[in-house]
Image 1 (cartoon, helix red, strand yellow):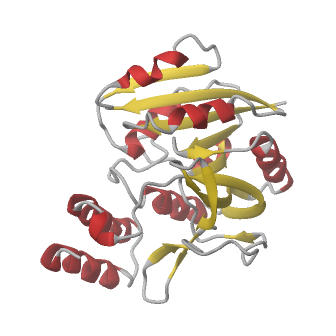
Image 2: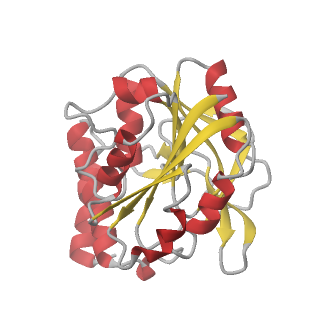
Amino acid sequence: MEAVAAIIVTHNSEAVIHECVDRLLLQTGVTLSIIIVDSGSLCSKYLDKYTDNVRVTLYRTSNIGFSAANNIGFTLCPLETKFVAFINPDLFVQPQTLEHAILRLQQMPQVACLTAKLLQYDIERNLPTGRIDSTGIFRKFYGRWYDRGLGQQDAGQYDHSTFLPAACGGFLVCRREALLEAALPEGGIFDPDFFLYKEDIELSLRLRKHGWGIFYDPRLVVYHCRGWSKKRADIAYSLREMSARNEIVLYQKHPSVYVVWAVFKWLLVRVFKI
């Protein structure tokens, strides 16, 4: 069985992470280690139940951001690890998810990262909603990045495998070899200049520049509770501003005429608070 490490970065995720980890512990067909990086939770006692689990490594740090925390998790992967899964604490897999993802990656040696069909999950009702969270990240003709299908009822409209411009970082199963090849000069996998938001797009672009593919396989279905509100007004201004600013940073690192859109979007957020 292939050695796989699942990295989970948590920050005050006590409502969802136990379900996330418990489902991972049921994975079949792989030798799995789970690495939890607690990035500054106000009270991290909710993670104490994993301190004696030999399959779980728990690392606590201050709130250093999603990218930097994932990079710490990557350094903690066992040496024999060939595949690394980046998994959000509010994402729930099925028992054979990782096994099937690894088999697919083994069939496609040019692919660095594989993602699944992400469906929305109502954590309050503890039920799937039947709506799509992400089937890959795409870009509009004018430059806006978006999760394909977000909010749509899943009727099989995205049930075809395809290469992607970018993939949602909520669920990414990656070839360790590719991550190391495309790593930043200082050794990080995700760029720590992105505290939160757009770091998955930046990684996808960097991997593609190194000749690797990003692939979507809809036969893999996972569930995502994603806390992003449907109503933009409900999202804290600081988070909206960070997301918009990070899009400018993205195009500073990967130069494109689309930076015009990014600056325009950031100005709308800064001036009109939209």
